[in-house]
Length: 249
Image: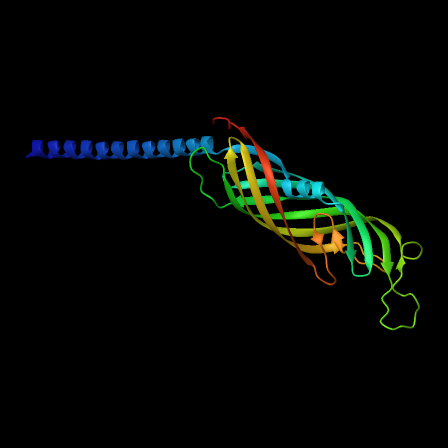
């Protein structure tokens, strides 16, 4: 009877230790697999730099006598679905707005982030994204000519164009700041060449106030109307992608 108890104790002790050893092995294997998966995930995360040009502004400059502009674009992938984005450009345009003919010229930059909502297949880097930009523009206005608004026949020749003297001339060192909400896509045409389109909704925060004249056009922001802080725009881009191989960890 005593021997049976001893054997029972030994079997129980060995079973308990064997169970503990098995659990420890399984736990270590699980930790190892989790670590390997994390490393593999980090190794698979692509890093890339894209830079390009806005085709719309480039084409419009070639075929329009009253517009000249260029916009350069770029984005840097820092996470699987997150991209830092930058756009810089210059615009010069001459417009007729009611009684005023004016020319606006200046430069702008937009910096922000894009979030890719598209799940790519292996080896692809297409984007369908939402984004946000903080934008700033520095520009000049030149009033070329204007006509007086006279709804009565009191002033003779009130419809005569005035191109010199009072109120005409240049307004310099103007600036504006706004926020842009962006929706767009970038799709690969051929190896490392991407075609993109984005739509912009702008919310103006501040702009320089002028005497006897309002900001009607702001480079980078587009058309501005009286007492309206919202604007809209778009770009149509072609970009080249420079892939980076992430370091193994």
